[in-house]
Image (cartoon, rainbow, N blue to C red; front, side, top):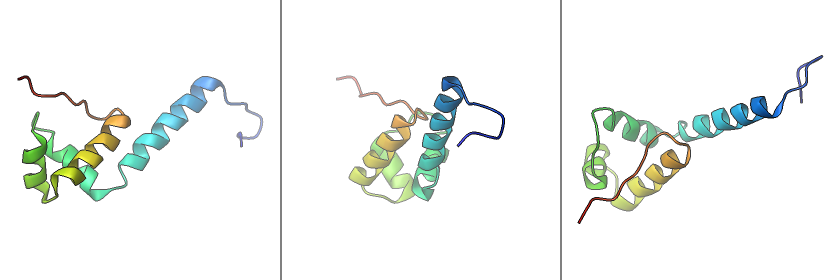
Length: 79
C-alpha cells in the first residue's frame, strides 16, 4: 500500500515499523505509568511495582515490552 505515485523505500518502511512498535507499546496505561515513573531516573522493579500498584512479574513483563521497543534500557544491579 503505497501512496499514489510514490514508492516507499526500505528506510521509510523501517521507520514505519519502528513507529508502529513504539505506538503499540504506548497503548497500555500501565506502560505509560511506568515510563512516567522512570522520568526522574533509575528505579528498581520493586520501586516501580509499588509506584504503580502492580505485581513484580507484571512490571517485569511490561518493562520487557518497553525495552524491546527501545524506550528503556535495563541493567542488573552489581553484586
